[in-house]
Length: 139
Image (cartoon, rainbow, N blue to C red; front, side):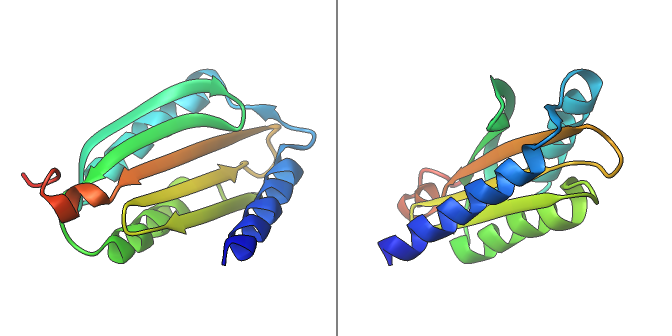
C-alpha cells in the first residue's frame, strides 16, 4: 500500500515536471484571479469550513488552501474537491493532479497551464477531515 502511494506520488511529480517544462510560474493578476476563484469555489462547498487560500511563493505550490471539514463523508468531500478542480478551476491545457485521502485528511496537489500560454499554476488543497469526526468542524 505504501509503495503504491509512493509510486503514485513519483508519477505525479513527473507529470508536474512535464507541465512546468518551458513554462514559468504564474504571477500577478493571473495568479490572483486563481486564488480568488479557489477561495470562492471552496467556500461554496457545504462540507468545508474555515477556508483559507493564500499565495506561497513556492513554485511547487503557488497556492495553498487550508480547510476543515464540517460534516459528512470525507470520500464525498474528496470527490467534490477533485470535481471542482477538474470542472471549474483547471485550465484546459496540460494538467496533473493527485488526490490523497485518509480518515483524517484530504490533499489535492495539482498543476495546470492554459493552452498557448507560457505559465502554469500549482496548488495544494489540504482539508482536515478529522475535524468533522471529533466535532471540531461542527458549526
